[in-house]
Length: 166
Image 1: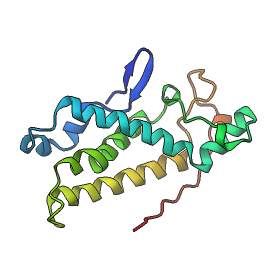
Image 2: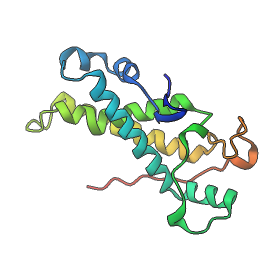
Image 3: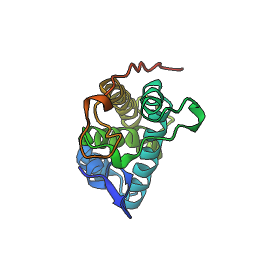
């Protein structure tokens, strides 16, 4: 479980081996799932996770508190290099998100509503949603001032409730 860092910038919360260890049988039966395709999905998921967090009231209030910014449109996504606590949870979140939104849909049989891949997509989506909600509600993992620790004034509990849209 390690973040992928290039040129001192975190580009992904997870790597191929994290996905492979989560669902080994998936790779045994699908040779088309390569290292490169999975890591591309993980990079996209990392970006989507950060954008999703950016759009929460929790992040916008925390960012505004530390910078005085009140214009919600100017608030950037969190800097992944400042996530210093609960990194294993971010790795898991990235893996679950990639499996549910990118990897499993690429091999799923959408003609069969009961296919294993479609069942797993739902399972991993629920795991990702629950973990995202847990991270935002905890609000204890971001080192806003980049001093190496998350002080009390940097912690702020959120209140995220995900809604299922059908």
